[in-house]
Amino acid sequence: MAADALLEVRNLSVRFATGDGPVYAVNDLDLEVRRGEVLGMVGESGSGKSQTWLAVMGLLAKNGRAEGSVCLGGKEILNLPQRALTRLRGDRMAMIFQDPMTAMNPFLTVGRQMTEVLEWHRHLSRREARARCVAALESVHISDAARRLSMYPHEFSGGMRQRVMIATALLTEPELLICDEPTTALDVTVQAQILALLDELRQRFGTAIVLVTHDLGVIAQLADRVTVMYAGRQVEQAEVHSLYGAYRHPYTEGLLRSVPRLDEPRSARLATIPGRPPDLASRPAGCPFEPRCAYVTEICRQQMPPLVSVGDAHLRACHYDGALGRLEPDA
Amino acid sequence: MIRLVLRRLLVAIPTLLVIITLSFFLLRAAPGGPFTEARRLPPQVLANVERMYHLNEPVWDQYGRYLTHILRGDFGPSYVYRSTTVNALIEQGLPVDLTIGGFALGLALLIGMPLGMLAALRQNHAWDYVSMAGAMAGISVPNFVVAPLLILLLAVKAHWLPAGSWSNGAPDHMVLPVVTLALPLIAYVARLMRGSMVEVLNSPFIRTARAKGLPERTVILRHALRPALMPLISFLGPAVVNTLTGSIVVEEIFGLPGIGRFFVDGALNRDYTLVMGVTILYAMLIIAFNLIADVLYGVLDPRVRQQ
Image (cartoon, rainbow over all chains, first blue to last red; front, side, top):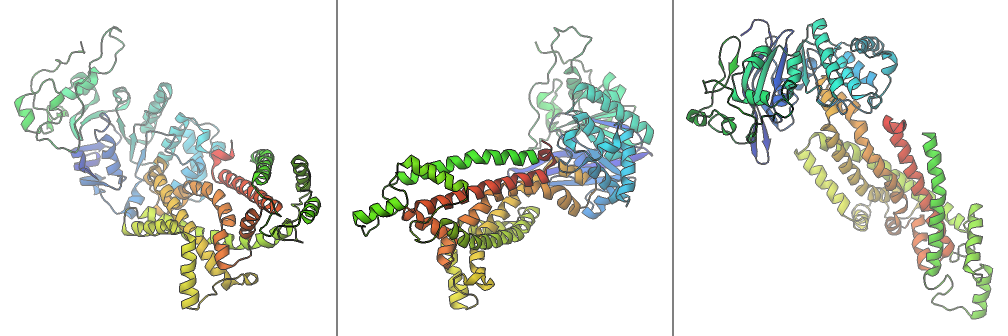
C-alpha cells in the first residue's frame, strides 16, 4: 500500500435492491488514489465505474447499498451519517458529472450555485464568497466573470457550464476531484479544452483527480494510472503507459483493439468484442468475461480469477498466462 | 414578460368573440325560448314581451345589438329574474363564489403542498402510502357526498357549525362549504406536489447539490422546491377557475347565493342574457387565471422569463 494514498478503497461492493432481486453493481473493489495523481477508470456502460464513485461520495440511489471500506486520508468515510457527509462532500472531495446541461440548477444563477458552497463550507458572507467565485471562474478561463455570476446556466454553452462545474468543485481546494465522464457530453474540441484545463488545475492545486470514462483516448491524455472495470470488477490496473503498451487482460485488449487508429488503412476493420456484458443480477462462479473471451480455458468457468500483481505496479485478474494478440478484426 | 402579457391579452379578444358567438347561436338553436314556459302566455302578450326584448328581430340584428351592449359592459336584463339585470345578479353572486373559492384554494395550498412534499421525502414509507391513499379518497369521493356527510356530522349531530345559508358571509357559515370545496383540491395539490417533487429529487442538479455537501434542508428548499412548483402552477390556473365556478353543487347544498345557481337556472329557463353573461364571465376568468399562471411561470423560471 502506497504511503501517499489519499483515498483507499477496500473490498467495496455496491448492490441495488430491485423488484427482481439484488443487482451487484460493484464487487470486491480494491484501489487507491494517491495525492496529486490522475487515476483513470475505464469500462463500458454498466461496468460499475460510476456507481463506485457515487458510493464513495455517499450519493448512491436510495435502493443502493455499499459495503466495505473507503478511507479518505486514513479516516473511514463509507456510510457516514448524512450530517458528517455534508461536511466532507464539496469540501475535501468534490464530484462533477457527465452532462453539464442538466447538472446545474436551471432556476438559480450561476453565482448562487457557486457561492453557496463557500457559504456552507467556509462560512463566508455572500460578498466574500462572490469575490472568490470570480477568481475561480477566471482560473477556469471564463472571462467577464463578475457579470457571468449573475447569469443563469441556460445562458452558458455546454463547455462553459462544465468549466463552471469544475470551478465550483475547486472552490474549497478539495484533495480529491472525481470527474464522472466529464467530457462525454461535449464536442471534441471542447473536450480537449476541458481535459487541458483539468491537467492545468491538477498541477496548480495538486488535486488528485479520478477520471471515469469509457473513452480510452481521454485516459491516455490525462491519467497516470488506469484501472479497467468489467461487470463490476476490476480486471486490470496499471500505469497508463504499461497498460497501453503491455496490457495483460483479454478484455483490455478488446477495448484497445476496438479504438479506431489513424495509422491503419481506412479499409481496416475494427475489432469488436463478441457477445454482451453479463447480467449483473446473476453472479457466476467463474470469470465474468469468460463467455466473451478468446482465451478461455476450463478453469475460467469454475473460478473467479483474483486481482494479482504481474510485476511493476501492474495488476490483473485473469487465469490465462500465454501471449495475448490473438484477437483479430472481424472478418 | 410585459410583451407576453400584452400578446396574450390581444389573443384573448378573438377568443372571447368566438366564445360569445358560439354560445349566442347555440342558445338560440336550442328549442324553446325564455317565455315558452309551462304556462303559455296569450299570443298578444308574448308578442309584446318579445318586442320589448327585441326577440322578434332577425337573429343577426339581435347578435349585433348584444355585441354593442357587451362592449359597454352591459350584459342586459335577465329574462327570468324580472326587473333585475345580469350585471346586478353577477355583482351579487360573484363575491360569494370568490370568498368561498379563495378560502378553499388557500386551504388546499396550505395543507396540500406540505403534505405532498413530506410524502415525496418519505417516498414509499408509511406516511407516503397513508397520505396518498387519503388523497386518492379525497379525489374520488364527490362533493355531493362529502357535503351532506359534513352537515350530518358537524351540524346536525354535533351542533358545532350551521348547516347552511350565507348569513352575509359569517365565518362559521363558511367553514363547511370551504372544507367541502377544499378537500378534493388538497388531494390534487398533494398528489401533484409529491409527483413533481419525486421527479425533481431524481434530477441531476439535485445530485450536484448533494455532491456539493449542502445539507438536505438547503437541497430541498433552495434547489428542489421551485422546480417542483411548476406543475402545480399549470394545474392551478384552470383549477382556480374550476373552484370559483364549479361550486354549483356546493352552493346548492349549502344554500349559498353564488353565481352557479344562476347558470343552471338560466340554462333551464333559456334565460339567454343570463347564460351569456355567466359564460362570458367564466371565459374571462379562465383567460385571466391562465395568464396569471403563465406570468408566475416566468417569475419562477428564468428560462421562461428571458424568452
